[in-house]
Image 1 (spheres, one colour):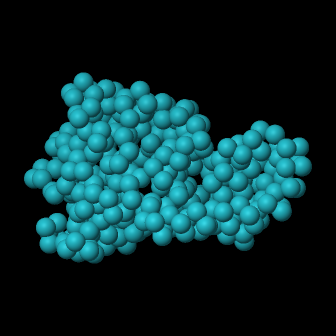
Image 2 (image 1 turned 120 degrees about the vertical axis):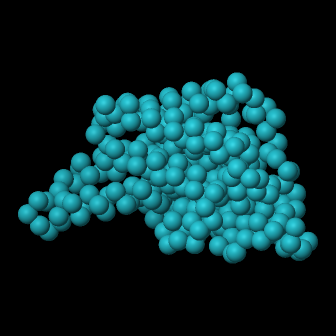
Image 3 (image 1 turned 90 degrees about the horizontal axis):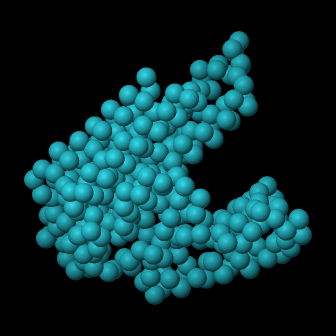
Length: 333
């Protein structure tokens, strides 16, 4: 990540959202977190990604009867219809082999139009354009800043952390706990320790945390009720780009840790050695880790980032994090 500079040092052609290209967002306040909406973070987020037939056709072949290729082509409504009708009894699935080139072309043309007009990419249509001025604080800050809401968010941390501990003790799947503890650590260190952005591996997690903060800066994380039921709301993520973008960030975190844990499991199983392994059990653990990480990381990550963006003192953020850790531990035993 580029070396950070004073926000006042940027020139007009170096600004995104009307802020310094190298260090955006409100300036650091003593005892508060550093939001760091840097050029590298924004460039990674605002990419005008195109779709490819070379990916759409294999998805059609393998997952087409469940609408997998239509989800890929950003057509969640018809993708869901295919899912519930088993590809229209197979007929719709067969017809799509002729429609895929047209769907790919239309998506890419719309993406190119957005880039030409300076609009956000299609997957971020709900976000401000890259050249728009970001307000000095989130638009939702006033209604989320009260002490009552802070107490309610602390209750959400208790519920999410306690539920995760109960899930782990009941299923024997402890990997999501490790992922969520890593999320808490990355969130805390990423706003206070600049060196994190320069370390191998951790640099990638640091960039991910910055993208998550930028998402919540421009999109209200929600109140306590919506945060407490993030797992249920995930069912509706397919219908709204905003929800899909949030879910994609957390599922990316889940995918990273799931891959890490799966590799460790394979090594422990000793492939080719005397121990062997059970593919079925490994797959169950894989799926549980992937989705449980999203289910429990989303409310905890949203609460922490909400109060970082509200520029709460570090003490508040650490207390909220401590609540999560304590309730995870107590629900395990």
